[in-house]
Length: 207
Image (cartoon, rainbow, N blue to C red; front, side, top):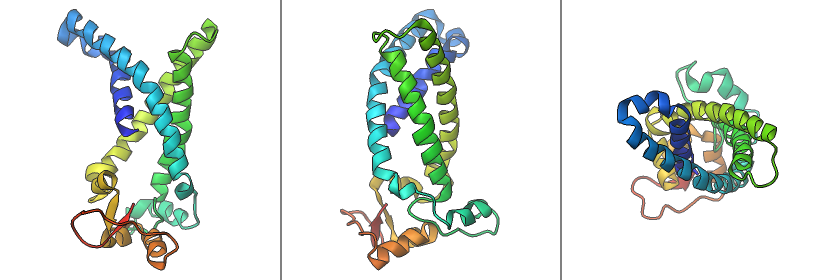
């Protein structure tokens, strides 16, 4: 889902603002080739993103249900006020907002409007196509903007976050420091711990 999201974001921007940003730099011939490639990638990768998004939502919806302790996370802005990490579940309150607003609402809007634009052979009238195009553009810009913060926090913003996404595991010390409520559920047996398949480091749990 992440790879298809990145491809759609880049190709969409090329088609939207490329003639203002890229055309003066690379010229008509290369820009025409790049735009045609972007259009084809956008059209064929779009349905793949929709399918992966639905799977993603089903897999993680239950872990993103708001809990009472999420309000403490918001009250301290995720630890920015108070100088220490705030206990959270498998996903903290900020990640839950990203999930429901970005992955569910905005991404589903992008998906539905994208399918309307991608398959114009179902008797959509011109007005519907125009409206879908506008909604698709606005919602895509919104979700891409929100994703910048998510990408930052998942790469260089939080130490160990990228490894957890890449391998699917974190060591116990990291889990306890960043997601203590989830860590306690794993240790108590309420949630089944994963087995780190050959991953280095301390004892690990599946993230």
